[in-house]
Image (cartoon, rainbow, N blue to C red; front, top):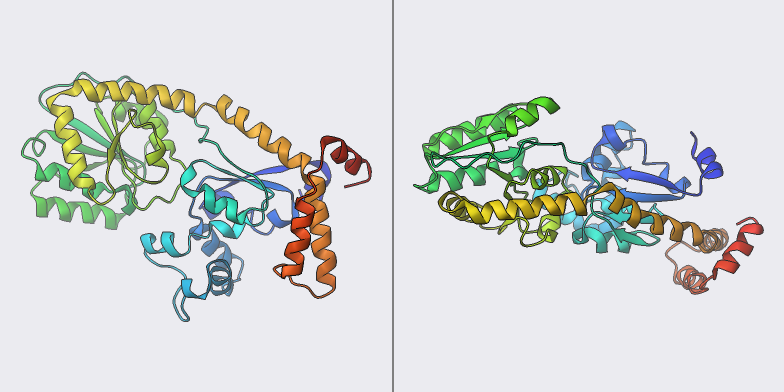
Length: 379
């Protein structure tokens, strides 16, 4: 459908926005023409922005838009758009690029909600990710011989597999009793990195399954005792891997920042961002010595996953936001018309006079009766 057809047929469009061109590449260029509630699954969408600019032949945007959003100091002259992930996440995450085109927004956690509120021209709600985790077998009985620790998903840099390896190798208790399994794919250079690190540490190379089917995933989880969901930097708004791990009733290790820090403190095992290896070692040694506490945390994690991330809870939180945006449509349209009119007199959108006029419209406080009357008049 064209943006014009969508605007004519629907009061709102709910857009699922994430950092992947293949999944979300049709959104840029449409959001500013359709009244949209943007559900931002990722706090970092720089990959989507970069690939969109390249794929549409608009490479010049790579220099213009970051400076427009974050100031000239965010991207010195001659610096390439792409930087190492931690630096990109800090200096130009690009969330604001699409947030400014939305009539309202949804964040899955508080850690990026303020940035979304600052950029978005309407209300922003924090609603935990709706995700029904696959049905997994219960945790296995704990055998004194050792533990199987799993990392879920692509074994990229921010999954911190190297930190788990350091934790295992540094502990005499863990070194010969923990088997590390990555259930997911790894690029050849990541595999080579793990092999090289294992050789340096004198430990067994982690098992990497490669991509697995749903049925194979269930089979690979049967003997898993603990799941590691470390992330640094945090690029996502929420993690389906964490929900899956929590729902499995196994103890889950997370890095204590971003959306992971917002989990209930008794539902996961937290690791400090700058001391992940040390804290992973401490948690695994404690679990191996006395599994009772870890198993209780796993059970609480399962309860949290089933309630906090239920689709019903998501719908109950989303519907009032949609209703508020629809009710506010007359005021928003009046503000847009006024901005357009003042633009015709040569005043830029950021001009103080335009901001004052927009603030005056925002302060009108339309009642439901005025909203209905405005709709009858064609707003």
